[in-house]
Amino acid sequence: MKKEEIISKKSNKAIGPYSQAVKFAGFIFVSGQIGLNPKTNELVGPDIKLQTRQALNNLKNVLEAGKSSFDNVIKVNVYLTNMDNFPVFNEIYAKYFNKPYPARATIGVNRLPKGALIEIECIAFTKGGCCQSNCC
Image (cartoon, rainbow, N blue to C red; front, side, top):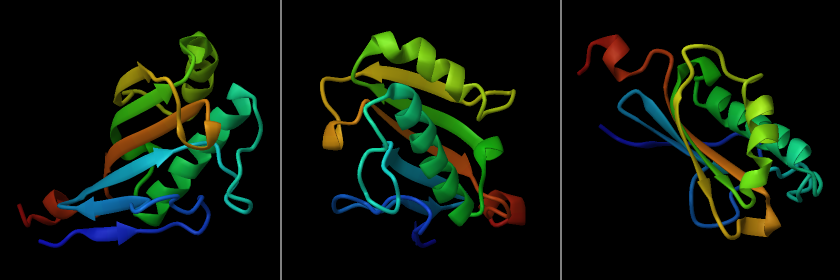
C-alpha cells in the first residue's frame, strides 16, 4: 500500500515541508488548518470567529479533495492560543459537524503559525476507502 498526497486548490497552500493531507489505507490525515485565506495566504482577520470559520472551511476543502467530508471525520485535534475562546469556537464547530460527533481534543498552546488564534487537524475515512472495498 502506498500513501497518496492530497492537495486542494480551494484551501491554503502548505507553509512548510508537509502535505495538506495524506491518504492511506482508506483514511485521510489532514494537517492542521488555520484561518488563512486561500487566495492571499494571509489570516482572514484577528477575530476568533472569522479564523475558526476559515480554518473549518479549509479543512472541508481538503477533505473534499480527498473524497471525504465532515460526516466521515472520526478524530479532531484543536489548538487554541487562548482557552477563553473555547465557547465561541465550540458554537461555530457545532454547526459544521453532525451527531455522532467525532472524538476531539482541545489543547491550549502558546503560539501558532502566522499568529493564528486556532488550528484544527483531523482524521477521516474516505469514500470507497480500503476497508470498504474489502482489501483489508
